[in-house]
Image 1 (cartoon, helix red, strand yellow):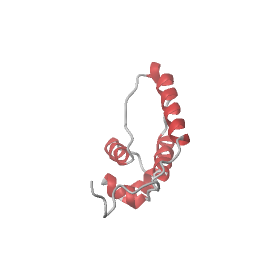
Image 2 (cartoon, rainbow, N blue to C red; image 1 turned 90 degrees about the horizontal axis):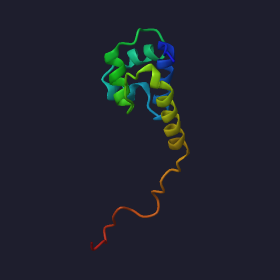
Image 3 (tube, rainbow, N blue to C red; image 1 turned 180 degrees about the vertical axis):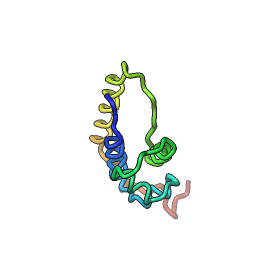
Image 4 (cartoon, rainbow, N blue to C red; image 1 turned 90 degrees about the vertical axis):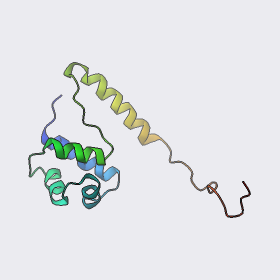
Length: 105
């Protein structure tokens, strides 16, 4: 499977949206101008490797070169992990505060 710049930019935009980040938030985290992120997401600029790595790191993604012959296995593992994360229930944070002012411990 080959990736076009359009599919990479679509994936980056989806990852940013999934993390509920604005382009400005991602810009701050990645150290890439917001205007450049906008151009990347709309395929108006050729994506440089340095920008891709900075944006991927800010989105907690990894840029990895994978031998073509093992891509189907890698894609299968990624799909499985994404499905597990998507179906995992959110932790119940309302059960008990981490501490209270009257704790003696």
